[in-house]
Image 1 (cartoon, rainbow, N blue to C red):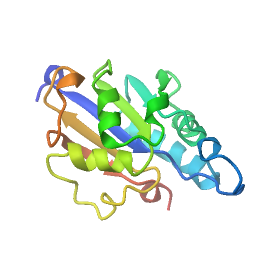
Image 2: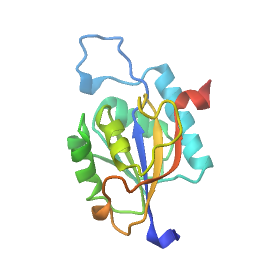
Image 3: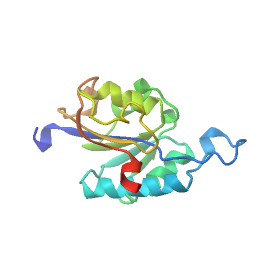
Amino acid sequence: MTENTYLRLILMRHAKSSWDDPCMDDHDRPLNGRGRKSATAVGKWLRTHGYVPDQILSSTAQRTVETAHGLGLNDVPTHLIPPLYMAGPDRILAQLHRAQGRCILMLGHNPGIGWLAEMLVRAPPLHGQFGDYPTGATLVLDFEAIEWATVSRGTGIVAAFITPRELTD
C-alpha cells in the first residue's frame, strides 16, 4: 500500500473510569487515577509510533472526553458525537463512514468498540486481550481505501494493538 491508497483507523476504548459514586449517572463518570495515567501512556505511544490522527471522533461521555484530553494530542481536533455513547458496531461504523481525513481515532465504549474491532479486522492480532478489549485498548488498522464510506467488514490490516498495562506496568 502506498500512503495515497490507504486510510488508518485507531480504535480506542476509553481509559479506566471511576466507580466512586454509585449514584452518578453512567454518562458522567470520570476517569480514575489509573485511567488518567493510561491515557497519557497511550498518547505517548501513539506519538512515538507516528500514529497521530487527523481528528478524534469521541463519545460525549465524561470518561471518553477525559481520555481524549489525556492523550495529549492537543493539535488534533476532537469532535464529540452523541450517537457514539454506548453505540453498537454498526452505529460506530456509520459515523466512521462520514469521517474526513486519512487517519481517524475513534474513542468509545465496550462492547461496541471491541465488536467493531473484531468485525473490521482481516485477521486479529496475536494478542491475548484482543477479544476482551480492556479499558484503554488501542487498535491501529490500515485499509486499502481512499474514502471512509468504502470501509467494510474484514478489510482492516492490523498495524498494532496495545493495552495500557503493557505501557504502565
